[in-house]
Figure 1 (cartoon, one colour):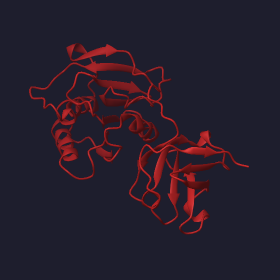
Figure 2 (cartoon, rainbow, N blue to C red):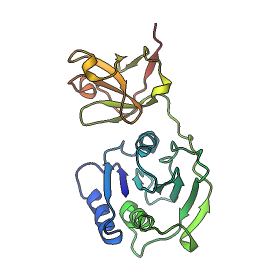
Figure 3 (cartoon, rainbow, N blue to C red):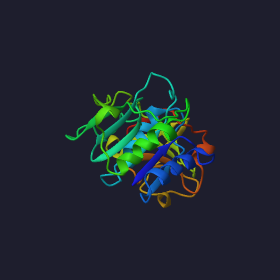
Figure 4 (cartoon, rainbow, N blue to C red):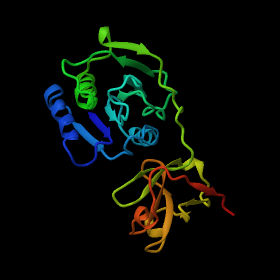
Length: 245
């Protein structure tokens, strides 16, 4: 399947235009719009989210990843990355920096191919989508359209403990994984302390909690409430870890 991971937003024409390319160039191959509201213009935070979500997909998937504030500039190269049995297409701007780099099969290519018409601001549609479609059809990087290059600097843009994503419910995802915290640790952000619980029902309605979410990341929430709105949470806020007693 082809998996979309973008900051295009849930509305507007951009995701639809990507899907139109795949209908034409990879007919019959499922396209999953995994998430279209990752932190806009923020490859470092998005990289943490991508690494957590990608691990749940089977090998052979092609991820089209677009969080690209440098689109149209020479400062970042368009690349194809293969690691862990999955393909990733997108900009080399730190977006792939948190993927598992310890895989023996890991390899990276710069995309030299250019379409006859390439807009200055929508490489996702014009450049990355056709390449992702070709990979999904079974074509592999080679010839004059690609140049082998060193792997991205994995972990280069590692972040301190902080919020990286706010979901529809106002729950705040962090870049912390379960092994980073003791169960009795407390987390403080924006002046509010969150205590550990296994699930929402373990605290009273309106109570604050942190837990390990279904993607393996530490998440902050309010039982039947909106933590982001109640406590003015936003992507980039740092987390203070308070050791348990």
